[in-house]
Image (cartoon, rainbow, N blue to C red; front, side, top):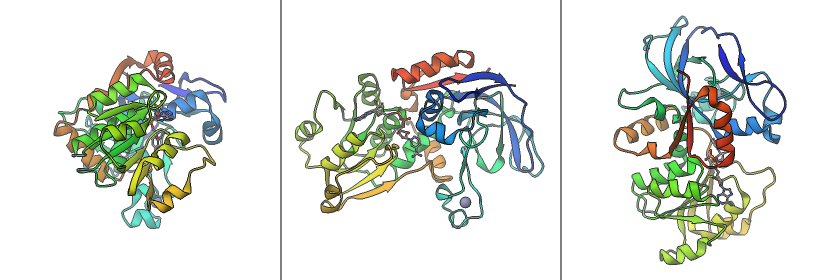
Length: 340
Ligand code: NAD
Ligand code: ZN
């Protein structure tokens, strides 16, 4: 089968022929319909410091997908051949304390598809049946393809109560844009989002953000004064940029709560005085809650959440190079690739 493989320890990604995987007990074989390019895939493409540390060349990359079940190993119940599914890409151990206590998103033995084992940029992928998420007929495949980052946004945006609150989001990447939409969807008061990329800030405005701020041109403090705000009640860090995180600490209201999703560089310094004397709560977010986040995502979409507004490009997988270049340029929201 065709698959996008990190063939060499260098910048790039290669379309290769690899064997079709076989489903074992309690696993299914999925024929991919659509996959989406994630920032993580871009890191692997660029072969940055993190991917050099993490990725073994020869890996099939990709973890955002939707497809149909075409084969099942022994022991799979509750699914039929032909069912359209996405899946939780974090495969957990099932026997650690957190798994057994129902906190699977905190399993220390998590294995990620497309990072620690072969992923979804391929004609077929094998997944454990317990990771599958069936997609209702009303949801089109081009949106089901990126439930994974939609889930990162939903997990982060719904971790603290935002109803009636003033929310700051730093970073208008695809995840920040979706999170802005979710905060408005569930009833936040002001949702202010920052970036240095006007193309992406425009998408965030279309998604319903109250104010978009290009921090290269305008100060966040000015915007707060304009909105008659003393500080933000809740904040979502979605840029991975230390400068953005420090501005956030500066603009929080006393007692504010911060959910951290963006991956900050090792050793990034922050002003601890702001955390301590303002009594802030800092909370790291990883992945999605299994499977409460998946339930909420599906239901929000079925009740009118406009996820399609972040989908800017649909391409054929044979044009993958163009897709990665688009992602690298930052002039895109989600880029979805078709395998048909
Ligand atoms: P992305 O890289 O597409 O978006 C980050 C955005 O931050 C970009 O648009 C960039 O222009 C912007 N930015 C850069 N400097 C900024 C500044 N000073 N102020 C404000 N914005 C600035 O990433 P994404 O796919 O939307 O993901 C968001 C973050 O979450 C990334 O850091 C990603 O690695 C991380 N992530 C974490 C998890 C998790 O489980 N914790 C999962 C997925 C992604
Ligand atoms: Zn576990």
